[in-house]
Length: 239
Image (cartoon, rainbow, N blue to C red; front, side):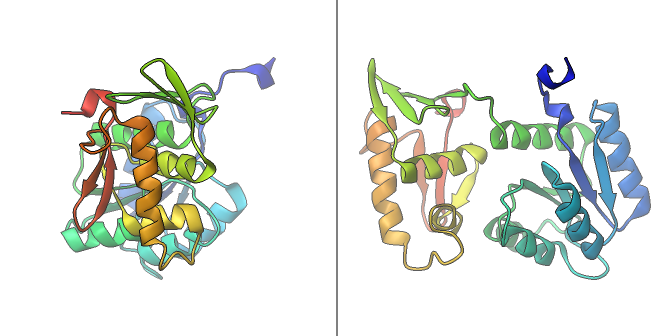
């Protein structure tokens, strides 16, 4: 039966937002050739927000330069109520723009011009992290995390993650291999009003390391990026 069909990555609804009609058509063609069938488009911030509210896509590919409001404004409005994954796509590649996009809540950032394969790989990675299989098991250097049951297996022993630890791990896993700022992590746990939570975050990070690291005092899986935040290294990516 159709409702028993296994949902694949290409079944996810994607919203493409760009005011350049030729580029929008190219994006549409790239995703269609890759097997994605449920694709929506918008050419302005207002249209993007309306389509997002009506269709609830599973991924948004969002250009920064739009005619009525920039992509950061669109993203801020989305982040007021939704954690839908967003890939920022823009001709502006300066470091401050990337930081602003990540601080605003973007899941990744790709500067134009780009290779179609890189776009598809980044989009696929975001979808895989944001919508893991129910029995997802994340392999780290010194432990295995069972996402479905919020459990950590290390040296043959099982430990349970607290709700806060699980929220942090999920956010870090969504951005595995990349920096997640302190602000984004605090917001993932506390919501919009997270200022002042930084010291408590450090405590949760320490407890999480005690469960997932072979040597918590010398972490290799959950590492600190001084002045910015933290990065989760999966087993295949650890030094």
